[in-house]
Length: 377
Ligand SMILES: Nc1ncnc2c1ncn2[C@@H]1O[C@H](COP(=O)(O)OP(=O)(O)OP(=O)(O)O)[C@@H](O)[C@H]1O
Ligand SMILES: [Mg+2]
Image (cartoon, rainbow, N blue to C red; front, side):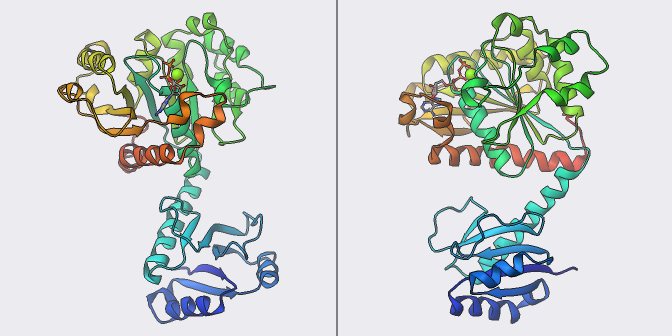
């Protein structure tokens, strides 16, 4: 097996020598090709050479501002404090060396695997719809944060907004970007050219790297899109073969477009709020959904997510037979939201979204890939 080239940079010479000794005297010696640096200049010089580095592990003081992505596969900051377990771009320095090295190796293989995958021509697109029986439960907030989180994990994510009045300009910077009005023409005429045209209408959000379509903000035009046209659009986005996830932000009605999207979805994140209306309506609608979609196993594709959770649930709500699968915390800062940026910057909410992704979406993906099914159920 080819060795992983590991470059370690730290001004603390004792520490890097200890780490190097550990690697040399354990099985890790057969896995790593090691280079050590304690001075910024030397490290910079090495990194600007032709040498390829698989993993660059260095303290903040030694890390270059912008490591060359062509030369370095995976950059990890060696951190003095143990702040975040989920952030794979940093690792706590003072932990067991075995834990430190095994974490780095598994993160490297995970990322590296993903990198290769994103280069592949054919990517299976997993479709996730965000839905709720009542309005204003946080669908757009969750869809945006989920898209951002999955994109940060190195996947290609497409966000598709199907609200009657688009929230897209609130969450993404659409100013100066063309709308997809001309694309709607190709959709409406069922043109063979749709697949080849669609890419040129896709916008990319600079902030999150998430791809989306800038629909015109016209309720009339949104209303005018039929379920067949929506299915055609979804199929074309999937056929592009480049997105790992397609996240559909729905509205809380049961029109034909909503049904078409739910029907195509591999997973539905169904949001609830901590109130009786939400529980009552969800309870009834979920029962009827099988009939609407003619799918007896629809419930198996649904993850019930309680949003705005304050830490405890009212006794009357626990009486409902609904099995809540995940909870997202109430964010007091969102009492007043004045810009979309505010929605992506709450650590406790981001953490809950990451857990939601890891517990309910990522495992399905692995199975999905293993079985080689393209959007099948
Ligand atoms: N966990 C939360 N804590 C506090 N406020 C929240 C939370 N989630 C969402 N909100 C707030 O609730 C409001 C409605 O959220 P959002 O627009 O995401 O809901 P929605 O379900 O998409 O609504 P619609 O049905 O109109 O599409 C927003 O002001 C948002 O900031
Ligand atoms: Mg919404």
